[in-house]
Length: 623
Image (cartoon, rainbow, N blue to C red):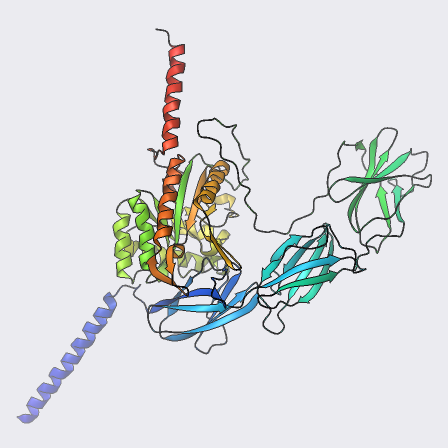
């Protein structure tokens, strides 16, 4: 009897265990796919003296546990602090910072919760000013440009020299690790380069770097120019009477020499650089031929071969050096008063650049994500809600959905119809580093997750770091995404023209961070940039980093809005409307709402326009 009871009790225990297991499996199966075990680490960069560090030249390498191969690399930071997302919880991470291509500093974090903050202290930048001389070490070079690069082959600074051969002072990451160094390239014209390395910098100290090139101050050897016909024979008096004009790299005529009866012209006391020789037949003033040459002190004889004769222009075509690509500086355009009709400026668009007549402004808030500065994120969105202004937010797919307070807040704001959602990558990865199928999968994952959480179907892609390639565009079409807001040089394939609309950011509100100085963009500067963008493109896309609106306790950004900066953002929205511009979402740029948001000036202009129309009609239509 007791044996039967024991068997029944054992069976009950077994059945209870099976039931518990089934319930556990069912429970885990019902948990959304996005409730994963990943977290994020917000990295704040400071200098060793406590000042906020400049983030634009910084990259990060992240190592998990004791692995020697990096788990993740951040090639370019979009702000300071910067949040590293999609890091599996329960691991230790080593985070190395590199600035200007040089190793800078390191910190460690044991990630045991959804979000943690760390500070990486960078050494103070080292200052260098190049002093460039000819080979005598005394005569300064006054017509050169100095480019400073690291061993990553990137140019990190450049400056023309002044009349004393000096550049501006560059503040760059010091070379604190053995075998790290900089390279200075001195360039004259297109073809003349002298390199000096290694250049080492000490932290926080302004240094003078003397560069003595191998070029002579003056080429004392006589320069011979041979004037040849099409058979490569020297011209003679039977061919005509010739002179050779000499032009410098800027197209300025600096000398002239007659051609002897033996078909030779001579020049002397020239400096190194690029020149243009032009042979002219004096009787008809026609160009016999030209020769572009580079004098470096190693060659002294050059040829001009007869070419098709053309009339000599009053001004020669200058030899324009090919520039090294750099970030252009925007030249401010003085705004035209609202009531004065300006002469229209009609830019000639490139095949990839579409000029719209939107006359509107789209604000873009990037990097929306769980747990990090969530109070600041929501406060920035509140500003647009309170102003009844449209806003496009970029959501990082794999770093969003677990912070229920944030997700429920954004869901409520989407219902107003003024908040649109774009995809800001899956784990904020550079899409150009993966294949087309991987890009398509990342977009599909992001779109599905955002749609499931926020009940909105994204149609805008905001590529991390602004980077995209042809595979990106075809992946977008695969996922029914038709708007991209990436780098200004985004080139959409001709086969997709009309299917994808590119609206890159044209105005940035970031803090201008320089050595020993943090200077925020003023609203006047931002409005000027907006006016310039609308004049050139018909629209402006203004990017906002929410971390710029957080209070700082001197070490890290706090999850508390900076009220002064919030008021500044509110004022900026008012300024945009007072200028008569409509505020729209990115996808509305190509088709803005039919009812504009009139500002004060726009309303006056609109009323005056009606008065003008009525006046004209009264003169045309008889009583």
